[in-house]
Amino acid sequence: MTKLLEDKKYHFLFPLIKAIAKALGSNCEVVLHDLYDVGHSIVAIENGHITGRKVGDSSTNLGLEALRKGAEDSDILNYMSTTKDGKTLRSSSIYIRNEDGLAIGSICINYNITDFLMVSKVLNDFITTEKKVDETFSTDINDVMEQLLKEAADYVGKPVPFMSKEDKLNVIDFLDNKGIFMVKRSIERVALFLDVSKFTIYNYLDEIRLKKGDNKPI
Image 1: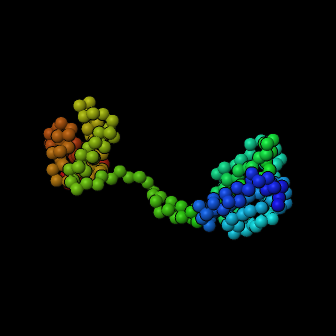
Image 2: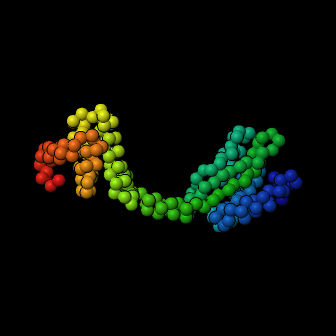
Image 3: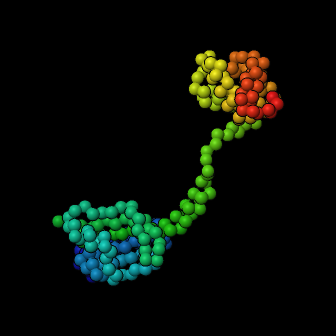
């Protein structure tokens, strides 16, 4: 029996690491280290296939560092590490300390997240889009027009009563580019929105399209 486990108060650690491994499944390696013997520190291990280690194998560099730091707080939680064969692990190392605060052992939990990272990459590739576009989904074209009118006012940045002719031309230009005038009776709705006559809307459209050299019929 190793020095760490000669003390009966540490005997609960064996069933503890078994319980953790059972709870988290075969992708979770749980290791108990006795740091009195860093060359053969592993005294218990569950799911050792993850790192390829077994009872009697050595400490890691983190165990050596904990010993070197003495009584300093050296627990390391939720860090990423990589095995020799390329598995990515999400790990935590908790150190067992004696009455003087010195690390004499540790419990290390290494969860193999390699498959999760692969799935995450596939999902990210699937949900990644080139750009965000505002699109109004409705069963009524009038709802679509109302949303476009709101966007036009936001684009100009003024309430209708404070809009100049230039502002209203900008509104018409915005709406024309959005295709609102493809909708039947849209001229009347835009005229009502801007508090002008429908003939004014026609004139504004003619003025805008003339500047653009756009001869599309209204």
